[in-house]
Image (cartoon, rainbow, N blue to C red; front, side, top):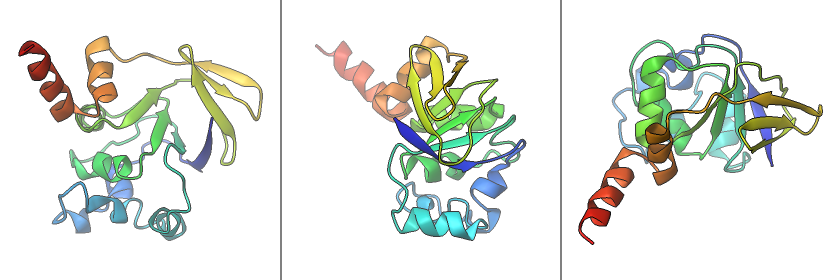
Length: 164
């Protein structure tokens, strides 16, 4: 079970997730410090490691809209955050899959900051409210990439399996 550490609305752009002024930083090991940089309280908690790995961000529709910057996904991956949204912007979704960011599409999600969430059997269970919500599963191939930790890890795994 994990806790919702941030509740966001609709149309959260990549500029909110990873502001454009930090675009010169591209290494996935360096991008996390700029996650939600303009939301200083949340950014400070992330950098101080006050937010445990596996914590959940909940968002409305169109999470990750805007530019195609990969850093928006890598900065979240760097903190091992899970994103549950009603839906994701197309390019952000693919960038996140390629980087192995754990994302869940849940069109009817209802949750508030502090709620305890569990993902099980194709559903999101809000243990705080007692409500459950159906997940829209990703295609098996895309989920396999996330489960492997990203496209590079997935490709490496496939190549090594082929050499056996």
